[in-house]
Image (cartoon, rainbow, N blue to C red; front, side, top):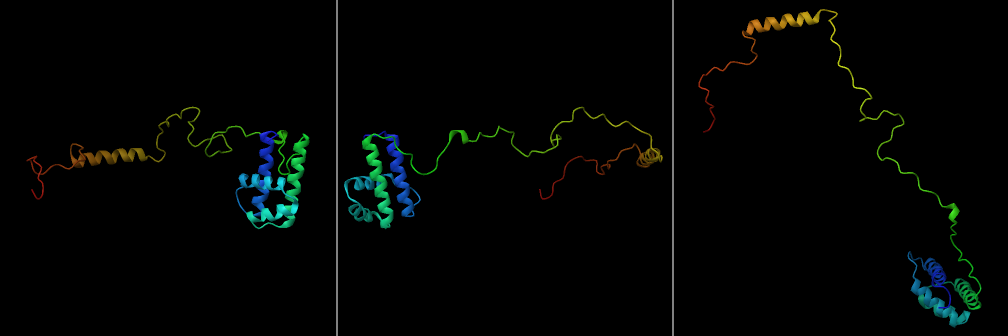
Length: 171
């Protein structure tokens, strides 16, 4: 092929996209587009329409427009004129958006207090205070009375049998 492979591939891909839209296909077929392009270069409009109908159901008006587009592209290519841009999406480099800066993931809160953040200064232990209602004295008296009633201040129950051997059921 006489032109640059990149420009030719763009035009073939453009033809493939048009054909896939006309046939209601999802993916464009570049091989089919190359064959259609070869048929258009070698045949007249009527011959191209008859030959292209073998690839699928196309409207004759669509095939006539496609033939005219392929022939004009071939003439521009032969004359060495600069290729006209393929109709479609035009991307300008200046319009490309910059990505957002990298941010820390996770739940972000507006306030500075984070759930798991350590406080700036450690909390001081609470200062001991005297009871306003005298409950500390009452509790101390109750503990002394309970110790006197149990004897020796032991809270555990005394063992009744003095063997000390463990007895297991079913053994």
